[in-house]
Amino acid sequence: MAAVIYSLCALTGLTCAILLLRSYQKTGVGLLLWSALCFFGLTTSNVFLVLDRIIYPNIDLSPARLTTALIGLLLLLFGLIWGNE
Image 1 (cartoon, rainbow, N blue to C red):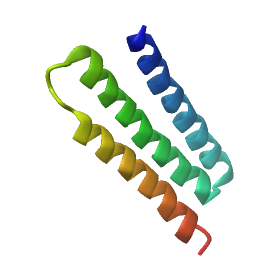
Image 2 (image 1 turned 180 degrees about the horizontal axis):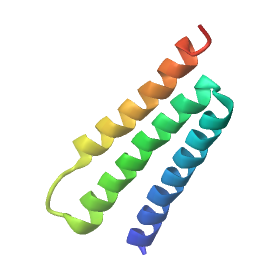
Image 3 (image 1 turned 90 degrees about the horizontal axis):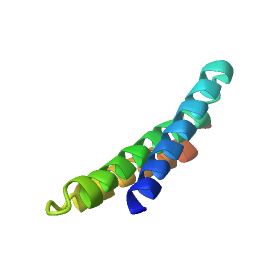
Image 4 (image 1 turned 90 degrees about the vertical axis):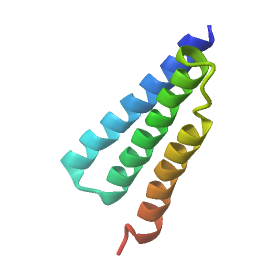
C-alpha cells in the first residue's frame, strides 16, 4: 500500500510541475516557472523516496531525497524573492 501512495505522490508532483510549466509558456509569468522547477525538485525527491523505501530498502537514499527537496524549495524561494525585479 505504501508503494502506491509514494508513487501517486510522485505522479501528482509531476502533474503539477507540467501544468505549471504549460501555464508559464502561455503567460510568461516568472513565478510559474519557479513553481514548476520547485515541483520538479519535489517530484525527484518523491522518486528517491520510492527507490529508498520500496526498491532498495537496504540502501539509505535519504541524503539524496532531502537534497533534491531542498534544491526545489530554494528555487521557489529564489523566484519569490528576486522574481519581481
